[in-house]
Length: 638
Image (cartoon, rainbow, N blue to C red; front, side):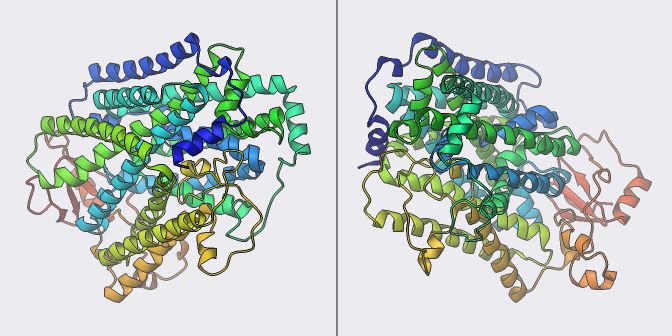
C-alpha cells in the first residue's frame, strides 16, 4: 500500500456509507467564515497603523504586542491539526499515561521565561540565529539558519496536506480544494498583514480550536450518558493509567519519558525555535514576554485536557469493538451527524490548527532568510526595499508550502519520515544554543562540529528506527494509530504521525536495536546532549574561548550562579564571572540621534560590563571598542 491507500484503507474499513458523513451547507458556511475572518484580519493590519512599511513592523509587529495575544499565539503556533487529531487517538488506544506530559510544561516554560527570553530580548535580535553570530561566528549562524529552513520547509507542506487527506477520506470534502483554500488564504494574510496579523489570527483561531474541541466533548459525553459514565467506562476498560515509574528509556510512555524527556521537547519548541522567539521579541517589554510564558502554561494544560477528554469520550462511545472509532474525524462526524453546522465547527477547529502553524512558518522563514541570508550581504539596502523583499519572501514560502503539499501527496510511505524530520532537527538546534549560552569556553569550531554530530546522530537514530520498522512485514492493522511512530524532538509531531503500525508484545531490544527503539520523547534530550558534549570536547582540544573576548550578554551565567561560593579567581578560570546585563542597563541610540545617552550613565554602564546597543547601526559597544560593525558604521565607540 502507498501512504494514501493506507489512510483510505483505515478510514473506510468497517464504515457503512452514510449521507450524514458528508458536509452540509451550514458546515461549508462555517468553514468559509473561518477563511473570510482570517483574511479580514490580515487586510485590517495591512491597511491600518504603519501599514507594514518597515521590516520592524512587518517582522516584529513593531515590538508593540501585549502579553495575552502573544501567549495565545505561542499556544497556537505548534498546536497543529495533527496534534488535534493525535492526542484523542493516543488516549483512546493506550489510555491516559500521555496526560503526564503536562508535568514537563513546568520547566519547559519556566526555563525559556527566565533564561532564553532575557538573553534574546536584551540583545534586541530579530532572528534567533543572530545570536549564534554574536556568540560564535557567521558560519555557525548560517548553518543554524539553513538547518531551520530545511526543517520548516519539509514540515509545513505535510502539516497542511495530512489533515486535508484525512478529511477527504471521511467526509468526501474536496482534497485539493481544502489544501488550496487554506494555503492561499494563509499566504495572503501573512504577506499583507505581517507578524501582527499572524498573531491576531492565531488568537482568533485558538478560540475556534477551543470551541470545536469543547463542542465534541460536551455533545459526545451527553450522548454517552454524562462525564461520570465516560469515566466509569474508561476505568473498566483500563484506560485510566496509574503512575508508571519504569526507568527503561525504550518504553514509549512512562513518567520519566513524559515528565523529563518532555522538558527537552518543550525547550526545543518554546526556547529556541524562531517562530516562538519572534513572538517573544515582538512583545512591548521583556516583562510582557516573560509573562506570556506564564500565561501559556495553563492554556497548554487546558489543551492537553481537552485532547485527553476527547479520547475518553471516544472510548466511552465505542469501547474496544469498533475499529472505525479510533479515527477522530469519523468519531466527530458520527457524534454530530444530527447537528448541522457542528461538523463544520470542528473542521474549522482542525484547519485553524493548520493555519496557525503554517502562517508562523511563513513569517519565521521570511524573517530568517531576510535577516540571516540577505541583509548581512546587502548592507546598503533601503528600509522600503527590505520590507518589500520580506513580503515577497513570505509570498514565496507560501507557494513553496503548496508545492510541498503536492510533493507530500506523491511521497507514499516516505511521508511518515517527513514528519520525523521536523523533530530530528529540533534537538540539535537546542543543543547548539545551550552550548553557546551555558558554556563560555565553547568555541566556533566546537559549535560547528557539535551541530554536525548532533544532526548525524539524530538522522542515524531516526532513519534506523524507520528502516527497522519497514523491514518487518506487518499486515495493515485494523485501526489508525496516530502516535505509534516515535517522532524525535517535537511535541506536535510526537502526538500524531501518520505511520500505521500496531504495538505488539516484543522482546527487549539489544545493541543498535535498543538505540533505534529509544522512546521518541528522549530524542531531543539525546541529540541536544550529543551537540553539547561533542562541542565541548572539540572546543577544549582546539583551544577554549576566553570569557573576556565574548560578546557581552551572549552567555547566561548559570555556572556563576551555581558556583557562587568559589572565590572569584577560581570562577574566572572556569569562565563564569560575567553576569547577564541587567535589562535596565541598556541605552538605545537611534539612527536619527534623537536619544543621546547621559555620559555619567554610559560610564556606569561600561564600568558594570553592561551592553550598549546602537540598534539601527548594528553596533555593540563594550568598554570603548566596537565589537560588531555593520551598515557602514566604523570607528571606536566612546
